[in-house]
Length: 175
Image 1 (cartoon, one colour):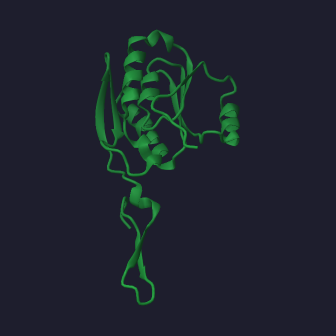
Image 2 (image 1 turned 135 degrees about the vertical axis):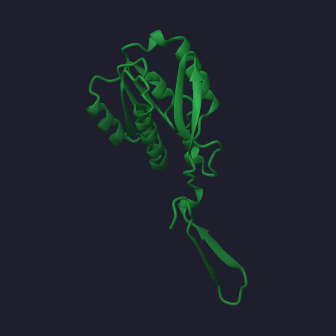
């Protein structure tokens, strides 16, 4: 099956002519990423992202949202607050904020809970080196499901010094 293709199954019950169509979760996954360019002050970022949201609320991290653009504009104008800091970004999505922070910080941990979103996040971290961007920080991606104490402990064990700043934009929790 091709990447991005959905598996469809149909069945009919008895004499009824109605068919039941079942879609697997791949129906909601869109990996038609394009490289987009974002400029914040004198900093230009190239990132893989989607141009429109998935139909699945859980995949909203595949595109750049307005709050992240606002946060990045603020951070680029106030970069001194990031210099030499260790940062963790919650709900990083494609990584636009964490990757910008990587130009100023000593360490940046980008987190998301969704495996498909983590894939594009890893791709964007790799893209920075291939584009020749100046990154002063080590950029890493970690899986973090909100409220998952085991994942929180794992991150704290990997980064025992903790973090100077916790950042997040356009993040939410569904109850």
